[in-house]
Image (tube, rainbow, N blue to C red):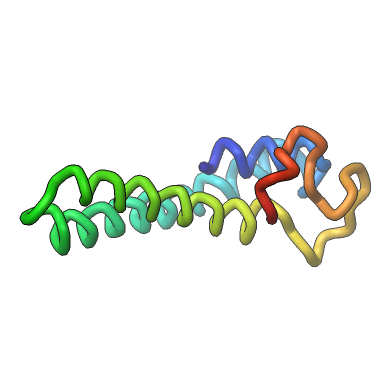
Length: 99
C-alpha cells in the first residue's frame, strides 16, 4: 500500500524530492500496518471462531477497502497542484477503480 502511494507520488511529481517523500511514507507506514493488523484481529475475533473461511474472506474484503481508502486519501492529494498528472491520478491507475 505504501509502495503504491509512493509510486503515485513519483509519477505525478508530488512533493519535494524522493528522499522527502520516502521520509513521509516511513512515518505513515506504521499507522497503515497498525490499521491492517487491527482489522484482521477484529474480523477474526468476531467471525473466526464460527467459520474460518468466512473470516478470511471478510478480512480480505476489509483490507481491500482499507487499501482503497489509504490510496484515495494519501495517494491522491486534492490540495496539491497537479503539474504532471491530471487530478493527481497517474495514467497507469486503472480507470475502473475510483479515487
